[in-house]
Length: 500
Image (cartoon, rainbow, N blue to C red; front, top):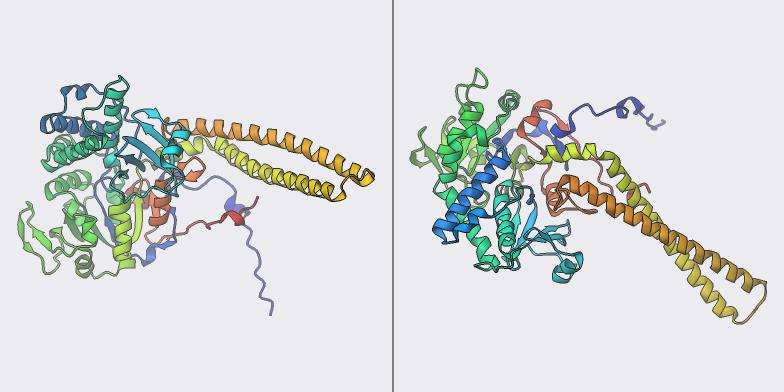
């Protein structure tokens, strides 16, 4: 029997524009069959509830400056510090010892580096950090890995620039400044001054997504259990979720009706590793005692992953958890519970729009990189030929016959080609560097693309690819997909498998 498979005609499938808006797609790192997912869990802040980032950054910075001045006795002049809210992007690293802010590549090696708003030359970065991977477990370093943490790095750079650009020393060490900024932000959250101001004008700070309710309804209607697992307190969760979902669909009397289980003050990532009990809360948020069983419609506080799985009768790989924090949401839920993971990256939409607008330039960059590799190979061949001819000349000594003249002629042509191709490589690399810098400037004038560090993936891009099974820009993007969708990852191609 002939077992040959008749090739499928792919022309009608692959030709033409994409059938969906790339800014609203769900992207896949690891195959995920939604038909096998029995429950979908959601973080709230920056996941179900997305923020108007500029407004929130301005509020966080204002509150932090107030705490620095009132609680930590910093000079009042800090209110005059000029801050560039475009300066910090997600995935950067703060060197608290030197006051530098770094962007690492996927190998944890330092790439771009700023002190205040001043870039460090590559030679200075190489001298200070070298080619060694940076150990983020070292307390000297702090990772700017969420949108929530952008203001603290923004303030650090702005305050350093305010003093040192004017030739004045900081009033404290870099490490003390960073730690005080972080503590001040924590104080603004801890005493609820920040959240109180957000709740006083929710539309100013939180994005209203009309597709959120229909998305949750579609998942519920397919038979999947839904749960909300957030670190925010009861009062804040109740207000934000009520504003987002109450009255959106007529058959849900309250936002709580969208979810089989609601957990507030979850203390992630500790939720995934500790064994704290669930505490049952009243509708008004009063503690009613430890929960020993699950009752739908009840709001819980604290808890742990094992009890949640028991309450909802779930096994790890049947759960998809959707969050925005690489460590607290994605890495810990995957390692502790073997949950499948979806990362929400709010800034993706702008990045994708720019990527498509600059696609011709990005294709040119890819062609220049390919040409550079080929020229490197050609130059290596020329050098090898010249070295071989030199050894032959040494072997034949002082002979002046036709063979020697042929060798001299061949070597001369090789030297000419080496010079020509070396100049072509230099010109290619110059165009590549110039074009890549211009593209990066469009994404962010300081750091370039969030997901890349020059020709490498950035640390954030590598973490996203390694830990998130799927990723997208907002929860409501799932509305365009079947609850039984098979998300297929592109084939991972190693360097030696590429079509050069």
